[in-house]
Image 1 (cartoon, rainbow, N blue to C red):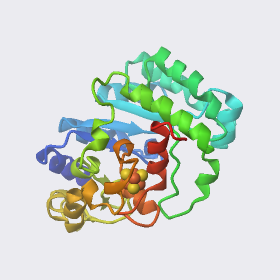
Image 2: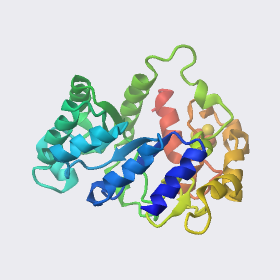
Image 3: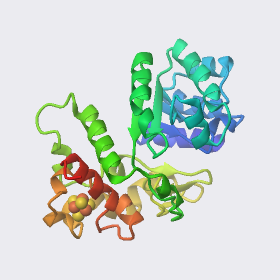
Image 4: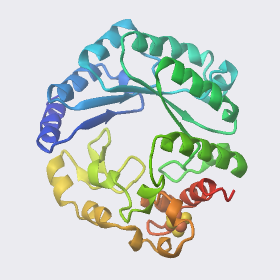
Amino acid sequence: MLVIKDLATAFFNMGTFNITLTGGEPLLRDDIFEIIEEFRNKGLRVKLYSNASLLDRDKCIRLKELGISQFSTTIFSLNPQINDCITCKNDSLNFILPNIALLEELCVPVQIKMPILKMNYESYEELKTFCGAHNYSFFPSPNISPKTDGDSSPLKFELAEREFAKMIRKIDAEHTKNVTGDQNAFRKEDIICHSLNNSVFINSIGDVFPCISWPVKLGNIFEKSIAEIWNTSDVLQYLRSLKKSHMKFCGKCEYSTHCTVCPGDSMMDGDMLGCSHLQKKCAKAIMGLI
Ligand code: SF4
């Protein structure tokens, strides 16, 4: 716990706002509430990613008392057969829905993430309506990436191009419905990735990475302080300096006005400065070209 205490102090001193705790399953840790408490004692907002199956009333009350800013979990479909089929667990919704209802009763903010695959594509509207009715934040995404070790097996569940495009347009319209002016203004900025400038990912053994899907190690918190890694990592300085104009093909690309260029996604395709097939597909979908 001393490590977490030191980390919480370091983050506080660095002016950090948000901590996201994820796993595996963070609620498997006996000390998860003490960990949250250390960050909350420093006034940091804490978001918890969990499958919700280990919650009970006492744990929900504890999360409420600790004042977490969001409890985030995943539902693939409200159709039990579909959710069971994807999670490979019988009766899977019964491990989630009663528990998030407890959180709702206690006014703990809940987010539902929905990875959209071939098998649950048609569950989107029902889940969106359900989230709206319960005031849960809804975060759907049809973007499926290879695993960080390069294993591309998840891609077999990816939507076909037409369904993918329809879904991207729906989600983009939802995200930008309250935006006035140019809805693609942020995609036209020269800055590539705001996350690289305001967040890092630390894994369970203390290795630090630019983001959760970018396997370039910046250092380890048991060897250097997080502040030193944040302020002096050459890799991080370089990544933060990247602009769209540094990317090999984006400058002359016809899709660049609608593309959320992501060097992490490009790296998944083999070249950090190259084109990401995923971001290209999203841009074409938003432009109505597929
Ligand atoms: S589609 Fe590819 S080349 Fe074009 S802007 Fe996006 S990432 Fe760059």
